[in-house]
Length: 640
Image (tube, rainbow, N blue to C red; front, side, top):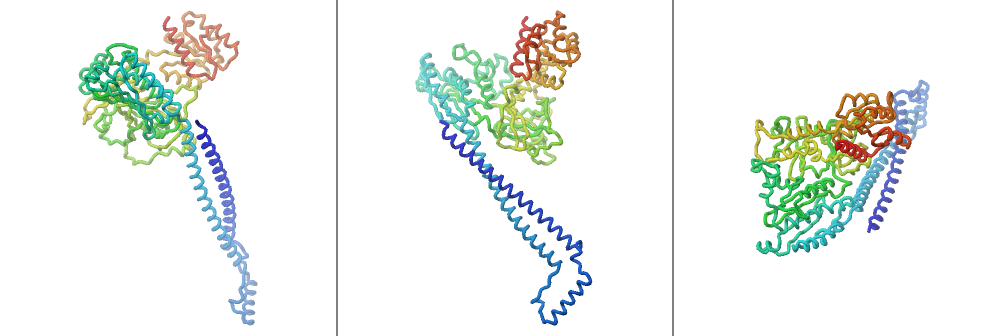
């Protein structure tokens, strides 16, 4: 199936190699011409120095002047005209040499210009070939969506037979190509939406007859490409979504108050369908009513850098629209700077780039809001969301990270991000560029945060992270819905109070205070800091000690420590001595200890286990396994 694309890729690879050889030869020719022109330049400078009086040969001595006078007299006596007899001196020879050098330099300049033009053509041709090669590689990764869609007709037939509800499934766009990394991950979300349409959307046959609808329900899955995205629609001709039922359920679950219902838009009500545990089903069945479903669909789509939205008309049906990038490896990215640190965001996730006016931004407490298209959008600066950064060294300026010039009186740019039916404003310091770049995922040894897609490399080798701005903001405010809800108020005076995410931040702070406390014991400050950052990212609090003696002091002074991560080789008191001292004190011996060391021999492992270590890891370690072990031991200790 991939034989033809492979041949094309091989041919294009050879063509790119030939173009590279040609470009290398042209570079050698240019270097040779520049060398020749340099020698010509030195010769010209030498002649110019001579002409300027530096060479005594160009000055006529008295005897030379006399000899010239004698020659003139002789010429007159023999009746030679000046046109018939030329006389040449050293000055004339130097002038002649200079003219010849200038002519040679002119020829060389012409050759250089010609080679430069040829090199430019070769570079452009190579750029086009690389682009074609990249595109062909991308399409070689694609598989038809039909490999997944064709599994659903049988599923729907089984459901129709089981529940005595005749429904037909129409598939459109089965030939649409999807990145193979995405294809299998689409099966579960689409299956849930199909079952959801069958259960919630399509009415029983007797109800459809009363509504003068065809007795057989219709569900359609339609796929197509739109720009750089693949769009999949799951549509049914059923009863639609009852907004009143959503309102009542939201009030019952405490998601909305009666006052909030009056100002809640239709899009915001639809968003409640994705809340964990939210279900409008009145009875629990094998198909629905458990409150597990659409929240999982949204989560799975976000893991694919995609989105899911819903539209519905009561009595006519519902449509769920899934949008995913054409490929997960190449994307158009917007690169921006915060200080001297660079970040990239997928352009598809950015609704609009704004340079706001001063009267567009209002503040309520610590929260800023932007007036945009009759909406009130919360504003977050990227530096507030990321509490760590690695700025570029001042001595090594990046040629690829030159900011777009802008007037000094302009405000910082804001990126309007759309997350489903909600809008957020992400503020950065400067814009740099927008271009198609390869997104490289992190290796298995690194567990990236949920808001990191991977990293990309710019033309000068600069390595920058690719982030999901909306997910980053959600994580920052602890999934607080109040801070994300945008309204349709036309105006908002500066004095008008606005409900901000302070409540959610308080909850986050409270949760942080109650999070487990882990003690890291290692004589290497670099490893302690790296490990502390890893643990803090997933919600743990951290204390640090340089050796076993400091660790014992921490344990004796702080009774809230629930876990110890300890090295073996340390000064003052090593890891084995620490374990031996710990097991002699009843209170300390209950705290689990994970040994993290470069010693991988069985005798080290056995001794650590004998002294009471709960787990043993060697460096380098896998973050996922290490964090899972910590969680298991803390949970186990908490259940005692």
